[in-house]
Length: 79
Image (cartoon, rainbow, N blue to C red; front, side):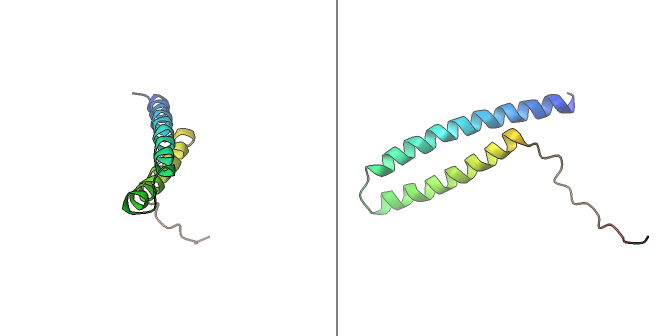
């Protein structure tokens, strides 16, 4: 499969994931708004933070494709 096709598919999947996370974030915020302070509220607040972090990652992937996670060797300054 050509690299550009893979990149397009990854961006599409990322947009879908981001859209689903947006919906779940909205649902979680609405549920959280009706809760009294306590364990459930704290638990949902933590879950919301994780959802938002995941959403940020998917949003980044949807717009920018990571080319490589390989570390590059240090360049020498031998001019």
